[in-house]
Length: 193
Image (cartoon, rainbow, N blue to C red; front, side, top):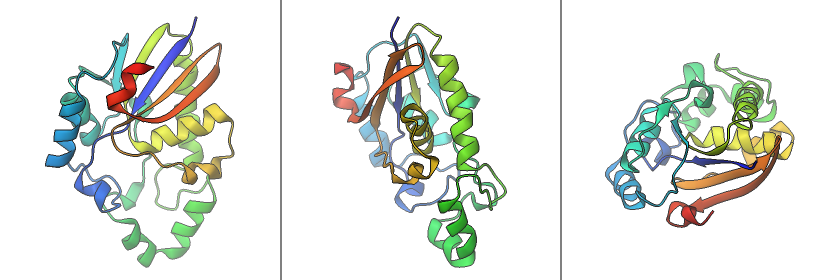
């Protein structure tokens, strides 16, 4: 039996535009409009999930999805850096940022390390592998990166080399834990999977 997991990145908001660590910011007008215009572009799914962030919930709603919160797909916990821009943190704590970007096990912000995120979402994907049919989840870009790292068996430092544009679908399909990957398709074509 083939399983299919489609991860959808959230629409644009002011935090994404400013390279700000999530601060609970809502979608902006452009992001909301783009998500609404993509509503109906997704094939039916047996499970529809959402990362418990404001922009993911709002994206799911704008897409017309009735999604359940999935804590296992929560965004990377950046601790005390939450709400600050990467430039602000880099100016105040350059050594901490450098460590964070080079050592996947480091969490100088007091939150979760990239390694821990990869482990958490890898465990979730392992569970999803046993569920029949299609799962659609609206998740933060860091969750898409972490799942991609796990599926490819890539070294964790490659996490930072994966770009995930807003409102794209990344599809993982496979059976018995062997996954294939389709990266970042615009939602307008996501139904072709």
